[in-house]
Length: 376
Ligand SMILES: Cc1cc2nc3c(=O)[nH]c(=O)nc-3n(C[C@H](O)[C@H](O)[C@H](O)COP(=O)(O)OP(=O)(O)OC[C@H]3O[C@@H](n4cnc5c(N)ncnc54)[C@H](O)[C@@H]3O)c2cc1C
Image (tube, rainbow, N blue to C red):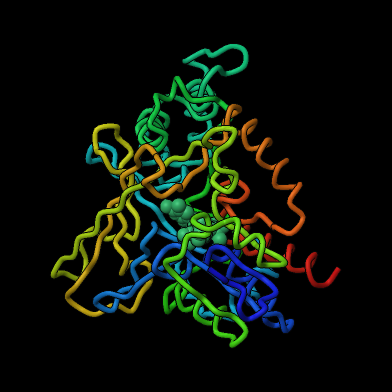
């Protein structure tokens, strides 16, 4: 089989933001690009589709938030953002709390009304547990930062579901700090720019990949014919799993996966908020999204909700969150070293770098590699 029939300059593996931005920038500079994607659609995990006039995010809620003006200006070339501000509500056994931890949460938890009262309450709780020395696990770390009530009701169950392990068996470093806000401010993020595209995310990718110099083929797995691609293409950008690229020769990197369950209702409003986190251990899902509340102009009378269930990962499932513990970080270093030896392949994105990245970080990383590749 011959693939480089059009004398492409680049083969790009993966139509997520990393691969698509690279393709766009390469085409802008007159390069010919073949982009292959193993799913049946473009846009990677940012993919959204429209249903009942509502943009549904197929791979979990995606809110663009950044302090990076260059990235914000860049993405705004391809879409208009609405003014959505993420304000998450937590449901702990039927009690509702605002997130992130702020004066509203402290009032709901303890009835305290001033920052000084809230700070005193947190200090009192931290002291009462009397953890001395360095925290040995995530539970000790969280309690030493925020006290028992918030840990028990808002952190423990959610974290254990997310990671599939007891908080006492999780390393302390997962929680380095817990942002605490002594203002009545429910904005989940601290960043200056925030929003969701008015037309959904997929339209950004349609524009990024519109050039005649870019051919896009979906439903094709690079790893099924890796050697031929490597022989035929002068330069490859690979955004798939780095261990998969090397046939898992040092062993498998671990991930957590997620399963999504969608449900539609004849209603304008089921849960009254875009995101509700279920923070107890018993509820099997971690969050429920109601898409029309992501500040969308949705059709009247229909609403769509998605439940997010964390699950163990294996090769038959989507790899979402890398488990960056010591064991996996050591393993990744071995693959990284191999990757550095391949001078005509650029490894990028969250799977190529085995790193959880927010979208703005992936945009930033793609723009940086473009600069290195073309403008050096
Ligand atoms: C549940 C969830 C919620 C998130 N929410 C947010 C949020 O609110 N805000 C935010 O900023 N970020 C969020 N993110 C992160 C965001 O999804 C990522 O930053 C972004 O998608 C990473 O882009 P990427 O190009 O590296 O990878 P992806 O978007 O994953 O794209 C990689 C593409 O490569 C394809 N591919 C892989 N291997 C092969 C192969 N062998 N052959 C062909 N194609 C291949 C994949 O199918 C995929 O389409 C969230 C992530 C998850 C999992």
